[in-house]
Length: 496
Image (cartoon, rainbow, N blue to C red):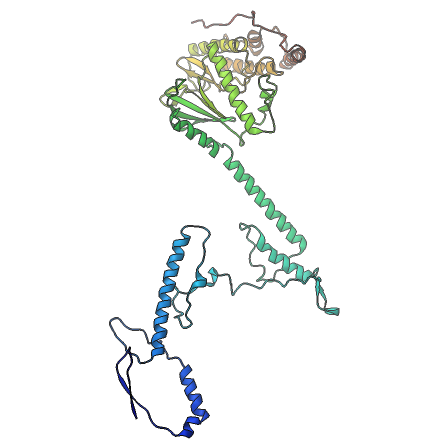
């Protein structure tokens, strides 16, 4: 009999149905054949439609499954878009893979729809971790018993524990090689890992929280930015000098309400941690101006006191009329001063200046005069005076770097003064100044004392004995035994 079938997705077809007997209908072979036909799935390898080509089908099941597969693909594409939009540029991403509609007969050749095993938690090539020993501490019975202290078991466990090391420690694939580490070797590797982490942390800390050569730490950089934002400085140009205690930058001055700012300034940034001036505490711990605020255990406090010390010393020198930089403002360990030079070019040091005989002679008398003023009027000893800390600008000598300068009542003030006199006398004697005094005469002229000695050791012995007497007197009376405020040696002036 002919049966007319109408399909909603295809053309009308006529299917011829052959009659069969009741015996054939009830046979097991026919039932099995019909069951196989109902569960069989057609081959869709060539089911893809070409562009513009329309194919008709009369199988409702196949059409429904194809439509469902297309819907699943569109859903997965939309899910991936939402996943990328949700995660953005975050380092920690959330996966939506569990919500994918993975179809059982989806094409396996598409690399876009597959999930790489390297991006999943399941690594098919990863070696299995060693089995965990039960709570009782052993496995097996009788002669086959294996305790938790077994060498092979402990070795494999130690190899597996290496995965917990820091990410920067490359441990390799010990499990895949069935590597067995003894407890001694594992403990050594673990201690080395911790040591490397602490060492890298210390290096990072020093780099971030200290001033290196021609560089500043973030905290110092923030202070400099605040000065520019406040209008104290117009801009900061660059580094012009480095030393054992500080880094000096050139800047263009701005304006302040209560103080005039020069057109050209310098920022003296005192080094915080990576400094070569390790013995700076001996210049400040016995200074009676800061003895109550000194703390050797706090480096940043010492640096701020060091900057404040230079500010006060420069103020004294400026009041006495000694040529020196003028202080603009002090911000923690950054000291802003006037620039000694012109048009971004710093004044040369006395060591580098090309001076004639007359200029050298005039510079010598000026230096001696400034040393006397510094000691008698400012009540200070430079403590680091040399041709490297004196500038030649506008035909005269300028003193700089007075952060280590101390008062004469310091226990070692005369030792530092004698060292300054030795540096000055040696430089000008080599410079050809015939009128230059030797170090002993210059010390007596500046200090007003009348010490004598045939050798440097004998002269220093007298200085140490004098300092011992002065220290005992200061502790008893609170003032220095030798006071030149009412008089003293006359000040030397230039002949010109």
